[in-house]
Amino acid sequence: MTESVKEKTMVYKKLADNKRWVDEQLTLDKNFDIVWREFSFAGRDAALLMVDAFVKDDILLWIMQRLTALDREQVAPDTLMKVFEKHINYTEVDKTKDFTKAMDMMLSGATILFVDKIDEVIIIDARTYPARSPEEPDLERVVRGSRDGFVETLVFNTELIRRRIRDTALRNELVTVGRRSKTDICITYIEDIANPDLVEKVKSKLTEINIDGLPMAEKSVEELITPGSYWNPYPKVRYTERPDVAAQHLLEGHILVLVDTSPSAIILPATYFHHVQHAEEYRQAPTVGVYLRWVRFFGIIASLLLAPLWLLLSLQPDLLPANYKFIGPTEVGEISLMWQFLLAQLGIDLMRMAAVHTPSALATAMGLIAAVLIGQIAIDIGLFSPEVVLYMAVAAIGTFATPSYELSMANRLARIFLIVLTGFFRLPGFLVGLGTLFLFLVFTKSFGVPYLWPLIPFNYRSLKTIIVRSPVPIQNLRPPMVKPRDPDRQPSMAMKPEKDPNELKKDKN
Image 1 (tube, rainbow, N blue to C red):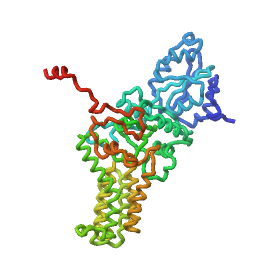
Image 2 (cartoon, rainbow, N blue to C red):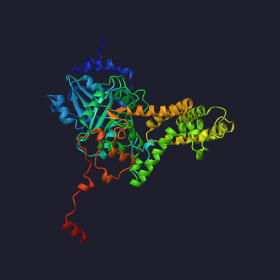
Image 3 (spheres, rainbow, N blue to C red):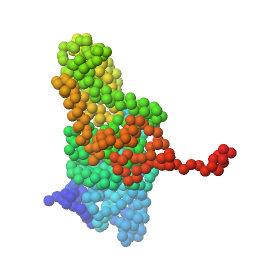
Image 4 (cartoon, rainbow, N blue to C red):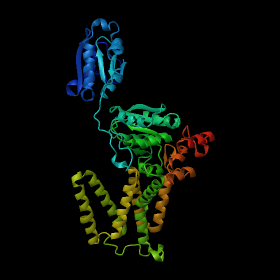
């Protein structure tokens, strides 16, 4: 009976037995990219096991040249220890007797050195991954600021964070998830700031994952560590591809979850109001930042409420004061207003999906077709009321202005929900829909944190920092919702010591 990776845990002494077991597991003749390279040094047979695409050829060439130049006297006795300590002068090397660990490391890119008559192997971590250079993410562009962004290689992402936080308390803990994929996941936090209970909770949820693989990376991880929220469209974690945004949240006491092969970092916990802020607001003067934030707020509110509210006022014009009777359609069209809104929403989503799958050279033509041939003709033949197209266009712009893509998708579903209730039940439907949505958000939590914090439960100090982008000199405290171990970011202005009068005289002179 063939041994499985789980059944075999110890390295054999004989090189032939090790090769036989490796061949049983990997079927070397059916995997062209798995290399078993045999050679001899100091009178001993040896072999290197590696994945061809992951290794650094120059490093392995140097190691093989150095080993094959050795004499028997230079490595005897205790051959493996002397090779490990004296003759492989490389930074990332390790040794183990655990065959399962060695195979896992090899499949993730390391090279394994087997030596005949020794039941231990050397792991040489001389690996490289196919990687692109850090570049500004499309979803989080800023006018001013850094242009680097996370990439699909985990070690590059941790380096981008370390570049911004050179703190000895920064922790990057690695766990491996997936029985077959063996996906590397990094839990990043600042030890003397982050809530230790939250850190342990996240670690526990990750280690409890029992699945064959995570090809969809961070999204699969989110669904696995936030059980019970599969059908909740509102995101319980925040995604970012910007290292500066990730570093800022670390300094506030949040935890990052970085998944190998994904350019997005998971920030947790996250409330509704974390998804309505953007890095651009902190790259401008505080006054400009406040204006930009309020414009975003207006866009988010418009994307959610403008279409159902106009539909309500069109169906019940008696709700309008006399001065606002102009609100409402002059011509209803061939189909009812509710179905016009739903069809317009469907059309917008189809155009968005088409834009994603359309080559850049044809995107402009696709936009002209959608705007002129479809939109205008639909109005001319009476299929749509012009006001319906107008308000759905404004709602769509508000959706695109929402900083969080996940929140914009959730608000889109909420808008459809409100339109349907308003279309069937008018004012009672609109009020019941709003109440249901509000209660749904009130009872939603992100890792124990109320989703509408600091509105519910009410915290004036924290709510003020959301409504108004506060200047950096007065950002003294970390958000209490994450229960940080160190709540202070900097001394308050009132607590800063005044200069000595003698020093002021020196300054004047």
